Amino acid sequence: MTTDIPFFTIPFGPCHPSSGHFHASVTVDGERVVNLVPDPGYLHRGFEKLMEYRTYLQNSPLVDRICILDPFAAELGYVNAAEKVLEIEAPERGKFIRTIMAEFGRILSHITWIGVTCMVVGLDSGCKIAWGDREPIIRINEKVTGGRIYPCYFLPGGVRRDLPEGFTGMVEEALSGLEKNLEQYDFLVFNNETFRVRMEDIGFLDAEDAIRLGATGPNLRAAGVEADLRKDQPYEVYDQLEFNVVTQDKGDAFARDMCRRLEIEESMNIIRDAIHKLPEGDYKNKAFKPFSKAKKKETYFCCESARGEQCYHMVGDGTDKPYRVKVRGPSFSHTLDEFPYLAKKAYIADIPAIYWSLDPCPADVDR
Amino acid sequence: MEERFNESVTYVEDAETTTLLVDNGLAEEVASALKEIGFNHFSDVTVVDYLEEEEFELIYHLWSHGAHARLMLKTRIPRSDAAMKSFTPIWRSAHMHERECHEMFGIDFIGHTELTPLLLEDWEGIPPLRKDFDSRKYVLEKFYGGERE
Image 1 (cartoon, rainbow over the protein chains, first blue to last red):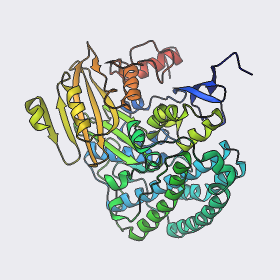
Image 2 (image 1 turned 180 degrees about the horizontal axis):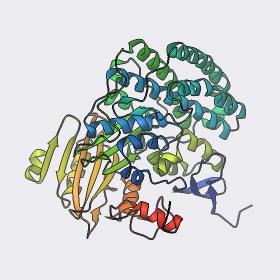
Image 3 (image 1 turned 120 degrees about the vertical axis):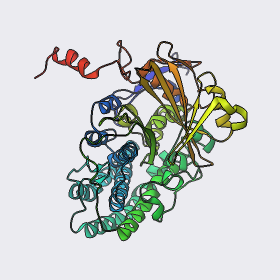
Image 4 (image 1 turned 120 degrees about the horizontal axis):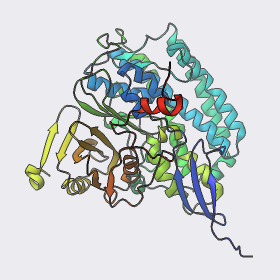
C-alpha cells in the first residue's frame, strides 16, 4: 500500500521527554527522516547582555546558570578569562581545588547523561539508578561549596572558601562507591542488549565531518580524534596530573556513549592524583576585590567541559564590569550542526538515541 | 602567510594569544589561507560594538587540531554599513555562529544562505546586543510600566 502523504512534518520538542526544551521540525517520509530543522531559543536568557551590567564578581554565580548539568566548567572558563583581563592569578592551591571540583562536575554531568540516555532508549531502571548515584557527589558539592547543584564557588583569583575538614575521606568514600556503580552500569547499561541494539550502528560521524561541523569533546574523540584541551592547551594544573585521553574509533552513537563512560574513570584518576598532590597555602588571591577593575585588554579562554570546548571571549575596558562577554558553549554546534546532519536518513525511532548520544544541553545552546 | 600578505596583516602576539588584524576587504582571503595552513576548527565568531568609534569589530576564533594552536582573526566594519562576507564556504560550522551574529548585532553576512532569526522570538527592535540597546530600560518599560521601586 502506498501512502498519499509522502512527507509529513512533526515537532520534536519543546515538550518531549527527550528533547529538553529544544524544538526541531522533523520531516519524515514514512519511517525515514528526510530533514530536521533545529529551532532553539526556548531557554534564551540573554547572559551575554546581563554580564555587561554586572561586576566580575557578580558574574561568577551568574554563569552557573548557563548549563545546569555542568556548572563547574562554566565557572572555570569564566574565572580564567576574567583573571586574564583583571591580571591576577590564582594561588596553586586554588587551582588544584578548582581542578578537583571541575572533574567532579564532569563526573556528575556524565552520570546524569547515563540516566537520561537510559530513559530515552527505554531502559528506565538505568535512569533511576544513575539519578540516585548522583547523590554522593552532590553531597560533596554541598559540603564544599554550600550549593547542591549550583556551586557559585570559583571566583577570579581562586575559590570562595577552603576545602572542609575530612574532605579526602569523603571523596574516597564517594569514589569507591562510584567504582562499584560503574561495574553496575557496565552490566546493566553498556553491555545490555536493550541499550546496545538501540545505540550501535546509528548516527555515524567520521573524523572529517566531526571537525567540519565543529564537534568538540567526547563527540569528536569518539570519531578517533585525540583532541582534549586539558592536554592540548593545558590550563589550571592539568599539566601536573596524570591521565589519558579517551578515544574511540567507530564514530557511532555507541562509541560516543563509551567515550563518556570511560572518561568517568579518567576523571576519578585526576581527582585522586590532584588530592595526592594538593599543596598547602592560600586558596584565593586576596588582590581580587568585589569592585576590582579590569585592564583594557581582551582574551579568549577555552576549557574542556564535559561536553567539549567551553569558551569565553572577554573584553575589559578599565571598569569593574566587562565591556563584552561572548560565551561559546559546546552544545551550540552539537545541537544545531551535528544533530540535523546525523538525523537525515535515520529512522525516526532513532532520533532520541542519536540526540542523546551527542549529550546536548539546550540551556547552553540558547544562553 | 607573512610573505603572501606582508603589510596588509598586522600580527599581535602575546603570551596568551596570537591575533591577526586585517582589513575587512582582505579578511576572506586571509581566512582561506588560514584554513589551508591547518586552522580547521572554527570555534566562534564574536562581535564587539564600539559605539564611539562607530565600528563593529568581528573576531573569528580559530583552532588547529594538528598544531594545537589558537588564533584570533580581527577585522572592523562600519556600523552604518554592517556587512561582511560569510565564512560559511570556508568553514561549514560558521553557519550558525554567523546566524546568531546577524540576529544579535544586525550584521549582514554576504553569501550566507539562511540569515533568519535563531534564538529570539518576534523581535522587532534594534538588535539586542548592540551597545545602544539598553536592556534595563527595555525591561522596565515592557514588564513594569516604566517604574519599579
